[in-house]
Image (cartoon, rainbow, N blue to C red):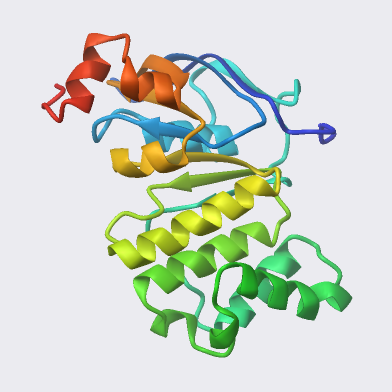
Amino acid sequence: MRAPSSELPIEFDGVTVTAGPVTILDRIALTLAPGAPSVLVGPNGSGKSTLLRVAMGLLAPSRGRITWGGLENVPPLKRAIVFQRPAMLRRSAAANIRFALRAAGIPRAEHARRVGELLELVGLGSLADRAARRLSGGEQQRLALARALARDPSVLFLDEPTASLDPTATKAVEDIIRAVSERNIKVVMATHDLGEARRLAGDIVMLHRGRIVETAAAASFFDAPQTAEARTFLAGELLV
């Protein structure tokens, strides 16, 4: 399958994902369009991470279809994903990015410039030669973002990127997300932190028990949620 001119919109049409008798995603209908970050919220186990993996192309639907720019079965050449606990290669921060550039097929002549630009973007320019596994948790997450951006993605998926980070590290990651979005890269992000969702989201997708229970512009979702599940969740009450 040829690559589309744009991987957006990403459209889910009745997407269901099952694992044995367990339904993880249930008949998802969703369009991820260009624009400000789309943020997935919902209780643990609601299906947020699975939805990201399906959108990335790492997991095939059990039923339904997903398209990227109107096409099915598109290789993820312009998509990238960062997980909550990214693995660091046993080499320097700069070498981690060079590895990602090679994997993305970026010409070797561009590597030095691109490594420098990406390290500066994520605030790690002074740590280029530091062993990646010796970086702090927040620094490792920023390096993971730089590696993902080495692919020049049009869409960046983030799975709980600030979980377990302290406020200073969280702000640094959020600042990068804003900078990425300003470069017209579509960010689709799962978070358990409603404050973070308020700060970053253009629109909210709320999941519960594998189903989408509400989608709305962020301001509307937080100020006037339409469903009982959203009201319960925003009130900080247990949603079971």
